[in-house]
Image (cartoon, rainbow, N blue to C red; front, side, top):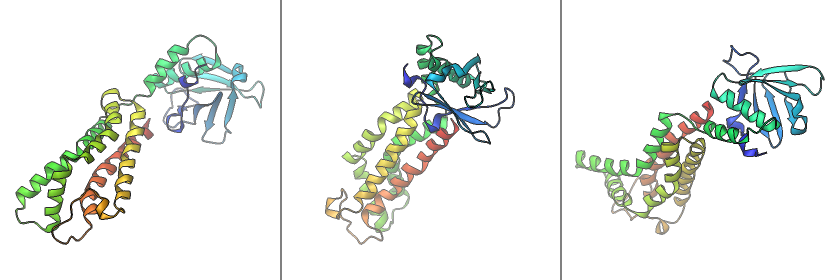
Length: 258
């Protein structure tokens, strides 16, 4: 059996219900833990774990429901229903493949790959924003300089350094880290792209924070001509970190909805 065809982590468990009509609140979630089918109830029922050797306890009823026999109570059966959409059908295909009833492995793999997709214009917009962020800040410095001819030393330093950094290897690092997961999000709608994009964003922010504690001679910024209220590193990179990390929490919102 190809275990990847039906392996689900805690973010992608399949919800199930005790009714085919009332499917507002799931009574539990199903997922595969190695070779064990796990039915995790949220209420009074204990978690049911069925090993592959006990696959005969699972009966496929139709495309969106199965019946299980409780091993601790021989003869007692429980029918559970999956979402009345494509996700429910694909969950049943995965269970069927896990039981070894027929040769549906390839179908289950293809349909599980479909389940790893997401539909969210907001997540794509955030990914595009994160790719464009260095040049958004770069462009905003021109506007800041144009509309505020008399500026404070902090503003002068911010404008000068961001115009320089936008054409420096620092931005190349930004794209090297974010480009692949962003492309996966923008063009392929893959769920793993959301995970990787959030992790990459967090990694960039942590790297910038760590660099802030290095000696000034090790940093990539030029010394300021006038005394600054804040250290140059934090003055330059604080907007970058905020504008990069705060929107990326929308990826978590999308992942929790799936």
